[in-house]
Image 1 (cartoon, rainbow, N blue to C red):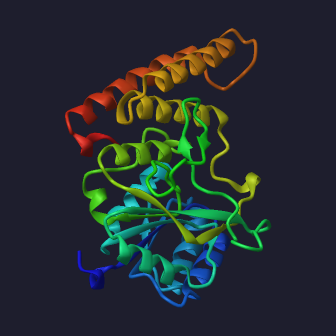
Image 2 (cartoon, rainbow, N blue to C red):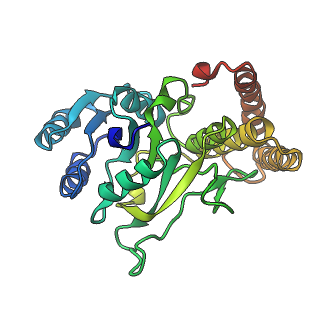
Length: 296
């Protein structure tokens, strides 16, 4: 790919937060280098949609209506609308430090075939030295994410702050089985298994206006289910590891049994385990047959 052809499209997803979107786009449009295009895919309810569309157009963005099937369906929808060489995922509660897109353009030009991931800081906790407080993590057997050992060749994904070669989305998509949760961690493991290099960019970051009570997603059961599915597929299929696969099944079987017996509620029961194990087997079959476009 000719370095002069790099065009970074922003695939920004939003839902019911026009004020947050306005802050995000104001920060974006203050950048010294602008992206090739900004797609705003809106999953808002009717009462917020008109204001959201007006804000997107005020900041010279392309507004499209989202599919209203959840975060990952909206990410896929936004990415499919992009026309640049690369897709930069984005959320409406982000802001950006100085020269953010200038730095991104430079790293993508240096290695346009890799997937680039970013760290973040919360708006009230910005590190005075680097600005970066949180790095993207890799899925672990028990469903949580952990700092990668090798940030220059990892399976970590920054859900709303990753730059992909756009061609990836012609065959590969985020899983849409759940509306929210940890499925972005599955996407990173799948892409790494397919030979894509995922690299961390330490030179810039995003500023996240994280407010727990204003999240679109606070479903603990869905969080556990997506964590199990992501870990199951990672260590049972994409990056097979017998010991980590056994750890995954053992841990989720244990908390599933404890929840089913009502000893303690881990928001995950034996029936969830069985159902998602069957789903995982179906995805594994599609992956092994190289039917990648059907893994969605």
